[in-house]
Image 1 (spheres, rainbow, N blue to C red):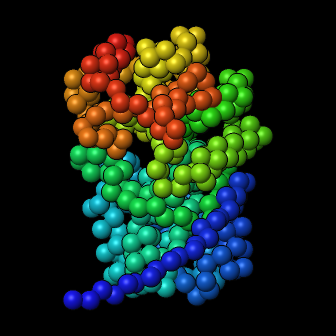
Image 2 (image 1 turned 135 degrees about the vertical axis):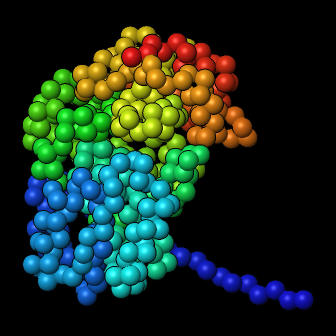
Amino acid sequence: MSTFYVELKRVADDSYEIEVGRALAGKLADDLKNGLIPSGQRFALITDSNVEELYACPIRDRLREAGFDGEIFSFPAGEQSKTRETKAELEDRMLEAGYRRDCFVLAVGGGVVSDLAGFLAGTYGRGVPFINYATTLLAAADASVGGKTAVDTPLATNLIGLFNQPKKVYIDLDCWETLPGRQFSSGLAETVKHACLADRTFFDYLETQMKKILNHDPEACGFTARRNCEIKYGIVMKDERESGLREVLNLGHTVGRAIETLSGYRLLHGEAVSIGLTAAYALSVHLGYTTEDEAGRVRALLEKAGLPVRIPAYIDREALIRKLYTDKKVRNGQLRFVVPEGIGRIAEFRPGVFAQEISEETAGRIIRGMEGQ
């Protein structure tokens, strides 16, 4: 019997830029010419059916005009497409088109596109580079920083995936102006969440500037995009692999993700997170970490952003309570919640522990107490 020791120490620099601006397709082409991705590689532009004609086709054409070779791989829009089956279908289409390891993935779209495309890039050919071109406020707020990529399954959301950092992220503010109002409001839920967990001053800003943001004021939208990235980066850089602090980014998602799934995706992700934030603040008031006045300010800001704050009447409350157990924060069969401490802070229950075990009875009391709409 013998033992052979395989020493594999790796030092990697996964740093990347996030560029916030307008009409960034030309900048993308210039960056590729300047070596952002090794020369000669084909691009696989992954997008959804909503974004394909609006943005993906013009970006593809711009890159081809600049001398790059590639094509579009589109899938039906919506959270319901963020599955292993969709990923496998895209991979098969890429293989049939002759894509091998000498390619890169360009994700053009919102959070579903970036999650799915980033996961695909991390496994295709055992890993190829990818670039994220975010077209929604939700993607700018939630998917542009952190490298978390995943798909959903019938039993749980975002539990099948990997950490995969992009080569660069582009946040094109021009795209926001073509978003339907409901989609734009959906993205604001993650923005409010970031303010609630890390920056009371940013929360105050959102209270006074929300109308400007909804009207696509360039300065307000630019500041909002950058501040989202700064807040999330400040957390992710301290805990890239979600071993502790990064869990705070799940504020509002325990109830939110469960509602989103049970709604059959009638609710957009941000709409479900908004209701989840309201539930998190109701729990925080119950536990004594937040005042009723502060919780009321959060509800009012969410409503000002055009977001729901009550559980829809068609969601069965008992089914919702059961669905909470599919949340990724569950440990040893125990529900765990991230709890806000007022506005701008998250409760830390022990050093490095930012989620608290909550009994099913307490969770049920909060959920049953939320008025339907």
